[in-house]
Image (cartoon, rainbow, N blue to C red; front, top):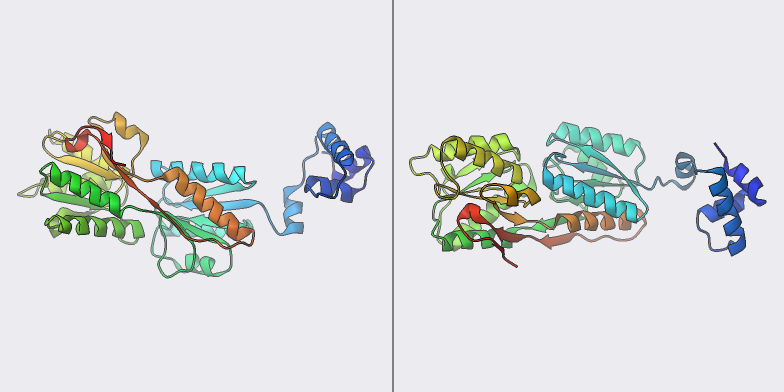
Length: 335
């Protein structure tokens, strides 16, 4: 493999000049730059990223720890993070926590050992000691989608309260009065916030949320099916089941069909987190859509601001309601 010395000899310049060209230093003359770049191409020279990181104390690498790579929301989030980082000259290493705090900590520790420049995290819990230490250690960090309260770290997230209120208003207009919710883990901010938004919206329309109409899920399909079974066994089953995650709503649909019931004739369904294949289910599923791509891009920009010594502010984006036939309404999108 060609070395930087080989490039310098081939171009007839010093090693320092080659280094300036590779680092896009403005002091190099155009003809010298062209000669060096030609030598780089002819010799197939590739800079040693490890050696350069030791000199500059930067690896141009970001870490991303997501809660569940199999969840379509996080898959899309990871894709947008990687695309934006690459466009800005950074690489991304992804760790999948699988909704397990211990695995989350493993990835955080491993990424920091790799000397990443900054860390994006969607926390699986309220904050393990390792996570809190990492946030307070000075390592540039941004929380995305979920966050840990009381930790001075920028948060890039979606505010879904308005969209949840729109959902309840729409269901109320359709005549639904018994509404139930499948919540996510109480240790996550999104799990708590979505239940609170739902309860507040119901109260606005004079509707109660009885304890037996709240089911504890874990953002996985099996929990959606289990909670739905309990709802359907009630003396007065709910008119609508709102799952606060796209996977749990599929579990709910499986249980409804297994009992020979129909959506939306026997029970309506809605979900938080829209995904492209919701339009292909039978019936298509009403959902609250997050601006997932922009969420990932904004998180990367905030993190790179921190990495490069600039200040970064938290970003809150808005979700929107997309109505489909799983609640009995004609298809359309509320702006």
